[in-house]
Length: 418
Image 1: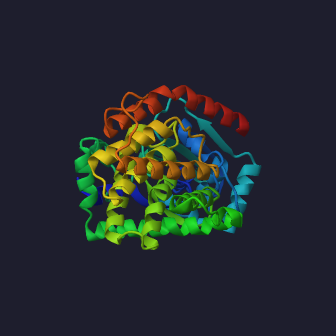
Image 2: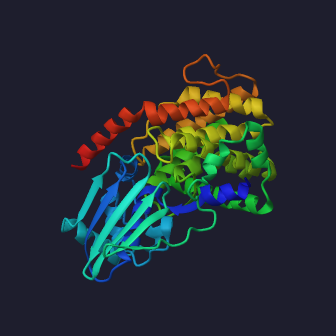
Image 3: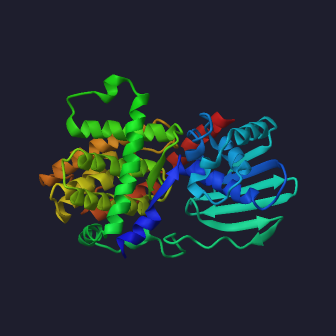
């Protein structure tokens, strides 16, 4: 595969958290199938989509949050083509209309516990008819559109969008660590420009987000570059989860992954601590390894992807930037898996900032140890014989072993909604 194919599918811009943005996109598509005032809307989500929509902030909404607001706003959006930037079209008039729908109890949100992959099923009833839109497996992958109960052909997939049986993440599993590194180093000038663009977006929201914290947090001393990088990541994720109006470059369907995997490396380049060309290749490897880990975990997981997938990607990028090769990168993966495995995902919310700050600290420590030839041995817990085996074990733990944990988290959150 080519790096450009992976970046087209996995390194993509979004406004706000990708899960409520996907809900708004589905609602806008459903609403576009009819005319007239919106009367009601119904939404069915898989458990993990619900979890990630539950408490997260929504951009351009006057600090509203949660799945019902995402549904109400989406059902009133005049455009169905903005996809993960749907909230850019929100206006004061749309917010007033959304508030009226909420007050009229015209919205229904349900969870289908049998769904194990990403699933969004939205029906919007308007005075002139009813529309339906279904997303499956990916945040913008429309698999069904209906107008008054009759199927409408979905629009053609965008260039680089995953097709059935052709997931770029799955393709990564067929590569060795040496080949994964070669893939990162194969970046073309266009790939490098795309990586730089995303890193700049993510560094911008991170710097903006520092204003939400006390000066003592931003100016803390004594923990060096890694500490500063971790605080920036925390600030960027906090700002994004709060609904700040900043486009970020997502990675493997997650803006938090994109921020975590890129900001520390972008900061290296911005401060002149490493050549831009090497930082670009390190960022490319960070994206590659985070996407590979996401394949094992699933796009939405029982474990924190911002920490596990992006933390692993960052650690690998740091090792490459420091001159390490496949052996050291394998050790870095083992160090992260042996350290952060089990950090749960309890939905997208401002608390994710602290989890990603922990991941950045762990990534720097894992990379430093790995470059010195130190790694958690395969005799320890779920750590495998090498980094790729550890990723497989981590996925097994997250998908099969933590299913009960995920269900219990969901019940706690549903009780809050009730």
